[in-house]
Image (cartoon, rainbow, N blue to C red; front, side, top):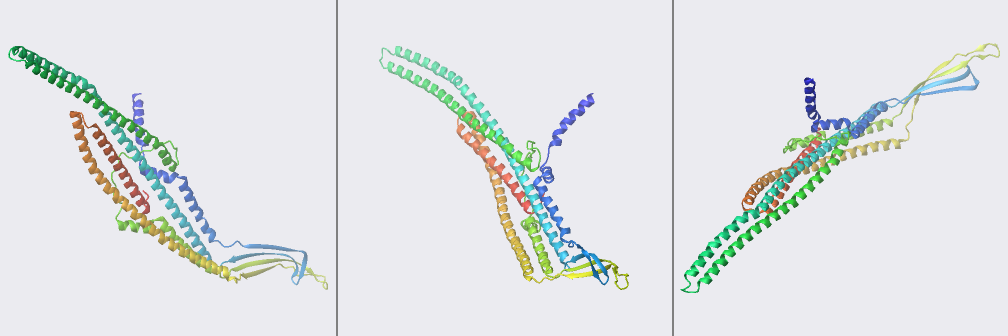
Length: 476
């Protein structure tokens, strides 16, 4: 029994580990389950089926005929006939058609590859946005705890303010009594010598009263300031709690969008990384450019398009040649009676080979087909050049974004260190002197903003590298 319970406990502990999934596993799942990607692959498979269709011969033609009344011929009475004819395009026409269909299918395959790498990039981008959201929630939760700690410190200062001022007031009162008694005795002792002692007594009393008033005013000022500190901190706490709630609410639609790309339940939890470090470029600039030229699916598609139009031009030229037909005709005869001999004559069936040829004399349509293929090939060449220029312009922008985020991360790291030092000094000063809470709150908001910018810069850097990998046709 104990062994069974132990196995159950181990199984329950292993469930979270089995459920945890990495980004690479999500990408594989998206590639296997995404409906749009499956549709694009089905279009490629459909295009492949056009290759054997293009290379097939025209269907043979069979004809049957019969006479309502047999026709007398020398061979006898012809009852009917049956023929079959097979047309053959000019030599090389079928190969050209198959080549064109094959290249067109390859264009569909490059469309499938493009859809796949775009899907992977979108999955990565959505996953990174979820990571950024979760990390920002953690930042705000930590900041909220710090603010609540500051609130407890400020509240403790406020509560301890009147108690601390009481001993000071008592000390001022006890200090005033000896002064008054001393002044009184001096006045009585000096009464016969003059009457100026009364003014001295009143001066001492007024001085002691003013000191007591200053002490009481100082304690009141400290208590009032501490209460303002508590209120200011509570305003920040409420604002932080509202921002946290908004962030948590915004996670659900992102999770639904991510799961929809994987074609699974929209409410399933998505696992993200614990932390993301800055990422390096996948290769040098020259290697990235060479990889784009050789592997980008849009450029590959226009390459296949050029080859398909070349095969189309060759086929258009061959279609202007005659088609040759070969066939057989089988004629059925019945014996024909001879009037003179009263004997049946003939009646043997006959097989006749046939050859036919088409006459492509209307040349305008064939010349137009050739020009169509030439213009289409030129368009494919120009489209490839334009796409290459567009991709390299996009690459330039991505490299700028990568360089910008790298410099931003370095600068933010330095600023965060300096702000943390300033916060430590301000917090120490507040603990000792009880002043400067507004500056502490400003610095805390500043460092929170810097950390959010740092998180955003890291995420943008990963998105940029993912976009570069997509251009290089690097799936995972």
